[in-house]
Each structure stands twice: as C-alpha cells, then as structure tokens.
Length: 196
View 1 (cartoon, rainbow, N blue to C red):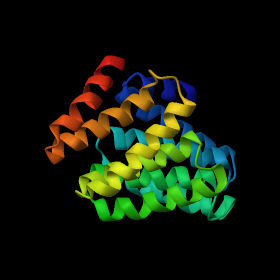
View 2: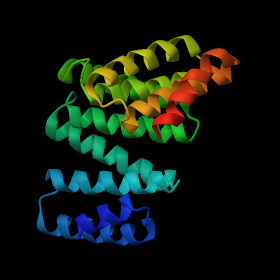
View 3: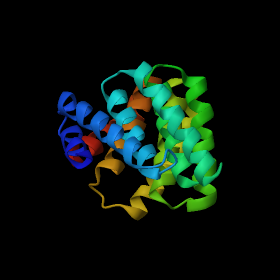
C-alpha cells in the first residue's frame, strides 16, 4: 500500500496517494510499536505530500512529530534527523518564514557536514537549500558562496546533466538575475536550459 502511495505521489497523483498513506499509517500504528522507524517514514511521506500540495498547516505537525521521534530514537545528531530538519526548513521557506527556515537549515547542514562530510550529496542538498533561503532574504553574498560550493560538490559527484546539478546552476543564475547582474546570470541560465 505504501509503495503504491509512493508511486502515485511520484506521478503527481496526490489525491490518490493521500488515502493510501493514511491507510498505511493506520495499519502500521496498529501492527507496530509507536517507536518503530516505519511509522516515522510514513508520517514523513505524508508530510511531504501535504507540503507538495501547499497544505502547510497539515504538513508542519507531521514533520515536527517525525523530528521528535527521530531525535528520541536516533539521537539529536543523525542524518535522518538532518533530513527532517531540511524538510522543515523547506516547509518554512515555501511559506516565506525565512528566519525559521534558516534556523532548521543551519542545523541540517551542521549535522550532515559532521556525519557525512562536505563531499556528500546530502550535505550539498542541505547547503543548496540554505542558499535558497539566503537568496530569499537578499543575503546574496552568503547565497552565492553557498551555491558555488554546492556546484563544485555536484560537479565532482554527479553527471554533468544531472537534474540536481541543473537545479543549482539555475538557482544561481536566477539569483544573479534578481540582483540585476544580467551578465553573470545569462551563462548560468543558458547552461541550465541546455541540460533540462
């Protein structure tokens, strides 16, 4: 059931995915102990679905519950905790709550840097999201440094036409455009379009 929900979610068939996630959650709560990792995974997937739909009020308490569970089960500084912090950061970013987003994003970056290292793709994702937040706050210097660092990591670890690399190239070009630096923006935007 959960796999079918994941499939529907990945296909954008959200209205079909939601009842399956809810049913999977109900079954797991009935069959497993409350602290079982599968319950946190299902809650996280449901929160991601709500976040994708713009149902932020429904997503937030689920993410917070997942964060609390993962911290209790795995400890304060674990990559799964960092993933949940990153999800919360993006949720707040989508709502325009940039200070709250930054707080969670910085925690995720710190944990993944320590446990996974600075060359890990998950660390690069965390740093990319922090750069998006800085850019939204018009802290362009910090955003640029972060985007350029992410681009270096992704260029070493991903194929040159990988969507995650393209996203960073595009985000950097978009930021330069917002700054009015059109000469700097153009090559990044063109490169992103060429690889999409």
